[in-house]
Length: 193
Image (cartoon, rainbow, N blue to C red):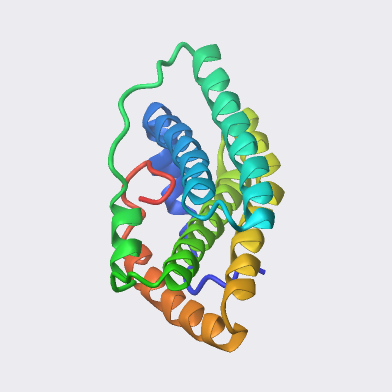
């Protein structure tokens, strides 16, 4: 369904469970960044009414997810902690050459968001199936449909703004690039680490 070209090893779950504070902090900030990205798309492509409407809803939903993660942290006596820059996101951005072409820039941003959401969904699936902590396993399982929906939303918008064959070719190459990077990860308790 997600089209990703690599899978997270269930062994990563043990790393995540050893440091739930770091995992949940990273997850909370990832939700904030997703909301901020949606708002940025609204600001930068405000003439695209359907995109603006969808990103408005998405930003609200992502902040609701942030609130849910933060509430779990507080209930467990954790504090939010400090955000860490995402090496994953930085790596994804490097795939696309800088461009002044507005449409190309929009499509690139949509594809980056699509793959981030797809990988989040894949990681949440692994957590939901293999975590010993049943409360968190259920929590991550409950996020799956939402994350998959976000992935589809971004990919479908990319296909609306540019020729589908062009987008699909770029998407396939981008998935190869993402798979090569993520296959070397799985050593840190980060959603994309």
